Length: 354
Image 1 (cartoon, rainbow, N blue to C red):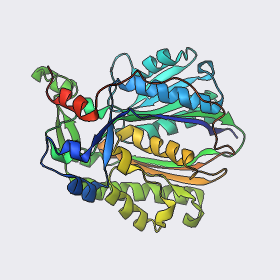
Image 2 (tube, rainbow, N blue to C red; image 1 turned 90 degrees about the vertical axis):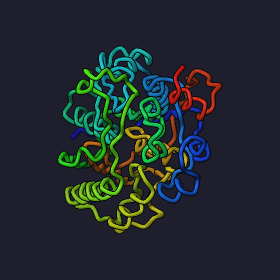
Image 3 (tube, rainbow, N blue to C red; image 1 turned 45 degrees about the vertical axis):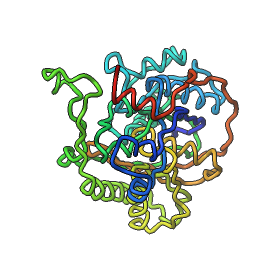
């Protein structure tokens, strides 16, 4: 049997930081209000397009795997904020990497996009269609944020992560997954003014109105992720105590805490980095996975559960078995172009374009 092993990992966080105190300069809020309700202290704001963030993250994943761009047979780019809709953004990552042998596709399931992308690439490797893939989860939400809306403006940040998958005869990588969607509730989390539906109203990209019903989202998120986790556990017959680490989508600390209690998991088994980055939508879960590896929370052969949810309302859970290596084989010197502006300065330029 063919498995899709994770052999490379990388992230790219833009250097500009937007703190809760920065948000309080133009919103009716403060650090205590945001932290107590979300667990977030700061988030990153990108000075480049999402494809550029993604290419750097992908280059770092390739280096960690000891591979070159020529080794990549497929690029799956999960996002909601593609810099272009046509041609697809994955093709721009291919060009930036020089990965001319790679097929390219975009996936948009909102915050679960990176995880749906992982299922897509892993399935193609398992069926023998390809032997290797880069999976990306990335967002530059800042450019289309409704910055006057306190309910959403405090939640989101920018970032990217990538993992390299390759065929293996060892049982590792994605062992099982459960994917689903509660489409009847899709309107409780939606971005209006973005898409062909609004073209006749001549609303430019970025001129958006966010529909975000927090309490309803909370309930649906916990229900969807717990259902997905239960299905994965049933599929594999694994005992919940055998899970070594949970790396959830980092949308809200209260959601994570509630899910942890519902699954009867000890808090020390849950990886959390929400205070540093907020919700990076499609990038969130994969950035958390990369950081869990970097911080030594992922050990050789460990079992990892990754629940997520997003607009749609999509939900998922993945059960991963890590391989034997947790250290990168090499590093890359590829970096983002320099940035001289603070996070607040970038956001203010979006809020008040010249």
